[in-house]
Length: 160
Image 1 (cartoon, rainbow, N blue to C red):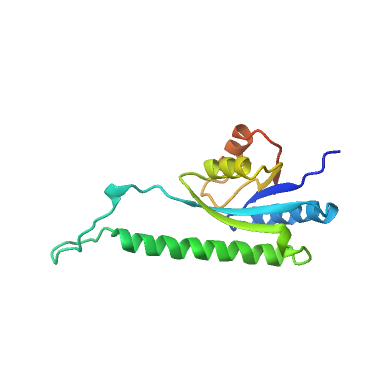
Image 2: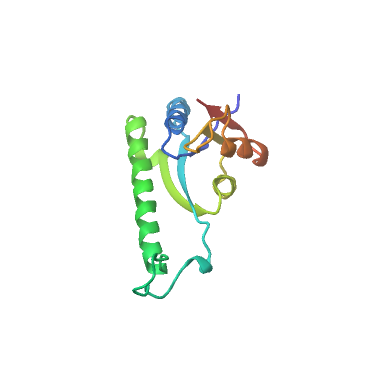
């Protein structure tokens, strides 16, 4: 039987992601050499044309976000997501040595690209993820999970 030692759990704050983290804990408890990488992917889909470097004039009805404002809001959102993920890992895996639980927040244009890239760069040997995340569509298998199943070349365990 293959013993997985470098597990990846994409985390979006959903109940399914919590369950995936719990299942990863079972792997950690059965193999003291294993570790889990819990990642949160922050999406970046804006380009330079989305920013307005000038303050709005008095007669403008709306205000496009300036780069500094966007950067501050994005940074605060990213920090909050990272904190929530780390807290969930502590709550769900209280008996696991924290040195075996790596929490990372990465920035990518898509969750699938982020998961695929992180798994390759960090030589993960198993991905455990929820069947559905926080996306708006209710399907048997979420769109991110479905794409990951098709794109990555390593075992993927889905949990609900």
